[in-house]
Image (cartoon, rainbow, N blue to C red; front, side, top):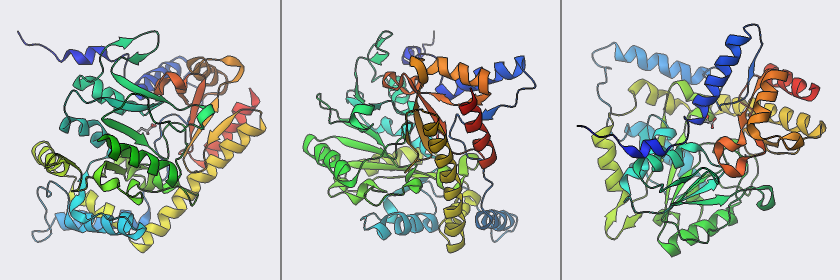
Length: 404
Ligand code: MLT
């Protein structure tokens, strides 16, 4: 008789954004005329920029010719994309990263979820609390969670690093020593950032303790302040302790196109084994590469026209962030984030729980957000709104929230 991976049974509930989608679907069915504005999941709304679309069309046409046809992509990504990424995202910022340390994939979510496979099951994992659920759930599925406590809503073997108003939503170095440390900055969900000095402390800590930092920089395009690093490799010593994940979803609107990459420096080793070799082996075995057309679209992200158009797109979303931040603040809400990030983190009013506020907002304002507690126990009493809606809907949503 076959057996299942019982670790899956330890996962409490369904994936956060699936739960929200189900709740909204049920509400819509009961209230078919409701004009719902969705500021929940961080999905973009602006169309693909013209320079990128042109690259898609060109690559699509190429695929219809015998000279331009491309079959399986190289499993680590096309050289044309890896080299432009290395140059534009890293070398131009003084980071010592080369093209052969870039692994192209179909998105940062998959890479963040899959990376744990190359590490032993007895590694201790540390996460921020609240946290993007993928880091925790993928480790629970693998068997690194221990026992789930329904009262504290925590797993016994995971080290949680609370990110609260008291520490400005920036984690402190943990008391217990972890082996794998997940950091995401600009942060999902709180929208907070680490300064370069703060991130350097983490890099020094990881090198001192033989830990690996799994650094999710999916939102780096939203950084507006100078002392905030765009990449962990801006810190001294990061090559020996950090893996970085990047996405094309948030900076270029690829949520429906799927493209991302992971950086694994060759200096990152366990004994004399390079993690680069393990990830290359994993990638080559389980993945057949992002499509040529999509990688060509990714290349266009770095063209002068692509860059200019995407700068405007990011500015569009950041204008929304300002509308939400200022509007809610003026209405007396406690808000943070939204300055280097498309996420605004608000305190729920009148001591409401995160899910109570979710229902309240859905029913009274027909606005969907994300309950803070869905990201972890320290998110209780908070609520996340995304700036990725259209400007018009964002303005209407804020008016509605202010009106209730
Ligand atoms: C979010 O809303 O947290 C993100 O959109 C989820 C994701 O990028 O996978």
